[in-house]
Length: 158
View 1 (cartoon, rainbow, N blue to C red):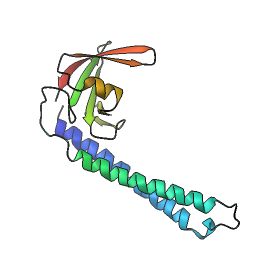
View 2: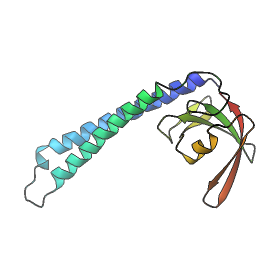
View 3: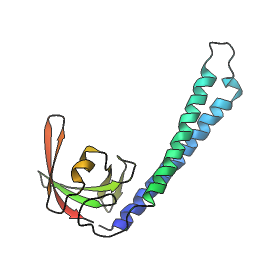
């Protein structure tokens, strides 16, 4: 697995999110400033609601910019002795299934597919991220979700 290639895919996904957020922000702004959004009575809140939506969408655009900037600072080293932010990790579960994770500075939950492998972004604040930090290849990690325990072994650390 080429880590630089994975980071490029993640950046492309973040740029795509930014593009969608900009479109949503523009649509919300247009709705908020449209003549039909002007209150006709003191109880008419359509314009106020549209303004709140536009404000939220603008904040989402700013968040997308911050996420992209955070990924521009990700470590480019090819190997880490221990899991830390910027690490690309292959985990093997109890059923010998391989799963790939990237410890990202933000955007937890984002996923991309690279050469038929899905790579999931996990932040250091996420339960799995907390468990992985500081671990090495061949270390085991236990993750409890609800009443189910899942066990993983770190197979690769890039």
